Length: 181
Image (cartoon, rainbow, N blue to C red):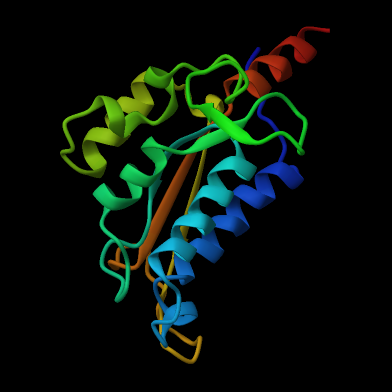
């Protein structure tokens, strides 16, 4: 009754379409192999910073030219943020510091940093434990792409699947408060 769902916004759209874009990088976008690890890392960092409050990220584990989850998680472990809302300030704050997703401490940021990596089932259980359904946004990008950009498999059960989960607690709580009035 008091839990109000949050409508999709431009913010949520970037979370969704940004993931779709990242999902294709290790596939048809990099069919020539010209995308360097540094370029891919920069793309992931940009997505994480711009989409906000990422809880979990899994990119197409079995795609042709993807990096392992451990490599991607390692990149995110050292990701830096700008302090406050000033887009001209240098990226100097590590996650868990003031200004790096204000109010989020390292233990709340990325779920996999607090788990023995046992796979998606362990992460799903932990996310469900920490966040009610209205407190998390989950986006899935699926499809195996040929080098020419055509899809050859779209079933989500196939191995070409990427998942991003975001903390939506604050917006969910604001929606609940609005529904009281």
